[in-house]
Structure formats: structure tokens, C-alpha cells
Image (cartoon, rainbow, N blue to C red; front, side, top):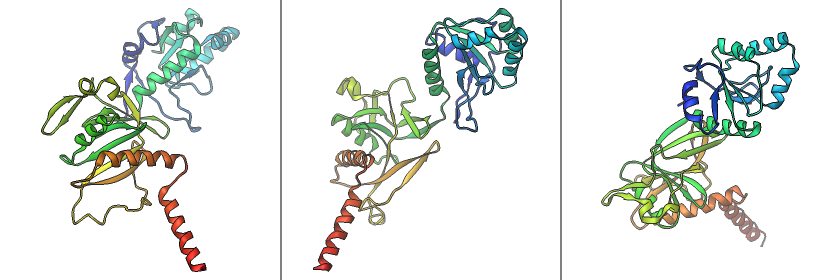
Length: 316
């Protein structure tokens, strides 16, 4: 799901954080801000003034302001008119940038809103890209428990009643941090990066069958909660039965993934059976994930040692 944002909503949401005020009339407020990658892979959402590759939101800083002032009236008019045909919706002047009233009127007539920001050039661009990236990122709602285990973002899924919340509670009790229970909102935060958060106002409540609603903050303290985390692994919990007993990977050589918002995320299937300590299994998997990222694979190491032993025995 691709989020949309109008110019009106942009002003309402970010006027405080970006310290915005109108320089133009309140025009083009219903225009929808959009973002799509250029052929070279660069995003076209926000950047400094660029006549060759204009962005949806154009920032005019001190350097761009000085460049405009160096142009003749006719050159400046042609440059600004070129912006009108490239889906530019907003122009923002940084705290010391200037623009003539004639130029502002030209943009206003084309329904391009012109703002003044009190932020300095680099801070304005960085904050703008951050807030807009969060707002317009592709999003997906998934059912499951999202938890931070040893700084590894783990999403626990499975059919209803399999024990997802109970496992999440066990991990929180062992010192790990809850991001979301039952429902998690994932967003395509950056290339190859999926970020997850709780879609509601608060992530401090958990529902556990037999206990009801629990307040994690009241029980374990604020450190037991985390607002968001990048998604690193998915654990799919399934009931262990005679029918599926041979379906599970015993060596860890299989590499399964699940695609979320166009990114393949490593997925493990955890069989649920009496006597299995699921919290310890998740912790072990998180530690193993860290080892894998650092270049070590236990399954490959085991197989290599077995092969060396077989070779040594055959030589003897």
C-alpha cells in the first residue's frame, strides 16, 4: 500500500517540525505529493533546485538563491517555468534564501505552494527527507508479534492459538523488547530495509489467552518496549504433528524467505510441541543470525568437519 499526502496535509503535519510558513497564497493544497525513482535509481521526492532533474519538493537554499539572482529576468522565468511541467508541487526557501515577489507570483499562478522554513539548508533537507520517507513509504499490515531479540528484529507468525503472544511474553520476561503484539505495520523504509512498528497509539498492551490484557510497561518497565525496529527474521510457528514431523530442516542448510514489500526476509519454521522451550530457541536463532551476518555458518562448518573426518578415515 502506497501512502498519499496532499500539500494541505504536508503543511498540517510538518509545519512545526520544519518551521514552515506560507510565502505564496494557499494554493495547490489538494495536489498529491508522489514519489517514484528516476532511471538512475535516485528518488525524485525532495532535493535542492535542479533544472535538469527537478523533484516533487524543491528546496532553495542560499546557494540556489544566489544562482537565481545571477540570472537575467528572462533566464530566471524560463528556469522556473520549466519546473511547472515536471510535477513540482512545493518550493521551500531555507532561512536565509530569497526569491523575488515576481517569481513567487509565477509559482503561485501555477498552483505551486511556496513556503519559508527557519531551518538551515542541510538540516531542512535531511529532516524533510526523513519525515517524508516515513510518511510515504509503502506499508503492509501483518498479523504477528514483532520483538527485538539481541538487536535482531524478529517477527513471530502462525495460526491463531499457536502461542505467538505467549512466546512474545516469555521473551519480554527474559529482557527482550516488544515492538508490537498481534498486528505490526511494516514499511519499505529504504532499499532492502523493512521497518516495523505498532500501528496504534500505544504498544504497551498484550493479550494472552487465560490472562487477558497485560500492560507490559507497568509489569516490566519502559525498557521492555521499543517503538520500531528493522525486520531481520520471520519465525513461523506450527503445531508439531505426526504428519509434518519430517518437514522441518534439521541441519539448517535450507534457505527459505518470505517476501514483504518486495524484500525477501529469512524465514524459519518452528515446530511447537510440549516440552520445547520456544524462547530459548528464538534466542539461539537470533544469535545464529548474528553469526551468519558476520560470515560464520554452523551447518557449513559441521558438514566440512564431517567431510574432513571421512576423508581422513579413508586415507588411513
